[in-house]
Image 1 (cartoon, rainbow, N blue to C red):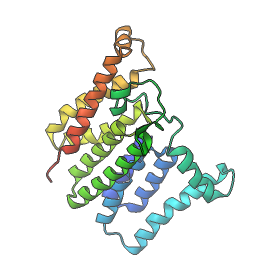
Image 2: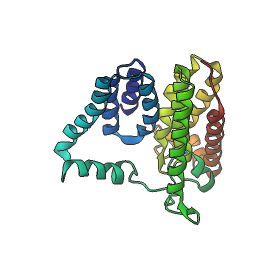
Image 3: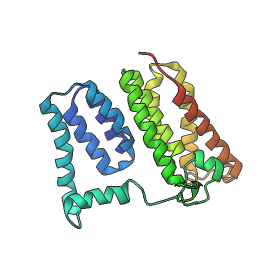
Image 4: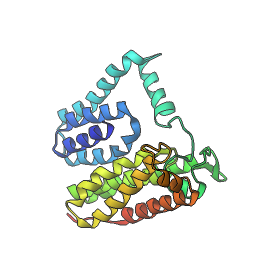
Length: 254
């Protein structure tokens, strides 16, 4: 549902249906804030649409009103401070402050899946969480600028792939399911550029293995034994890291 709302909102923005797109993206974030990473792409599309003053006001106002109305029944204090506090301290940081929450990514490659708090210092002045958040924000800004300067449908899809994969691979506190937002725009991109088919196939396989890990449904003894072998986890994580670096460096022509 979250991915459907997020991608549908981007489609509506691309079709210059800004108000409805803003509503769907608001609902997406109210369900779960994980697709907040799509916001830079939406802002670029919105700016490229050159909205009228009325459209601009409504596109900003509707999400605010929707959030206030839907949050009101659940607020345990003054509404606006409660919403801001909930997102900044609960929803956005998440409830599992680990380097990785079962995600086969950069952190699993070096530290495995054993729970380690991401408060650990990787440099004398910054924690793993702080560092990953910083580079994540920098990459989102960089991606938005590049998309703005090379704006077309294929690059919108590729940018969604890049920021989703970058977030999954390099941010801390990632769950196994957070690689899913990579797959849908990557699948669509395959119709425009055959180069991406091989990436889609491999990332689909690593996603399925990652989601299977720890849940073990259906029970497949050989696969369970394979995934419980630590080098297997690190090898799959390495594949994800290599593909992330490769895709981040790729470009598409209009």
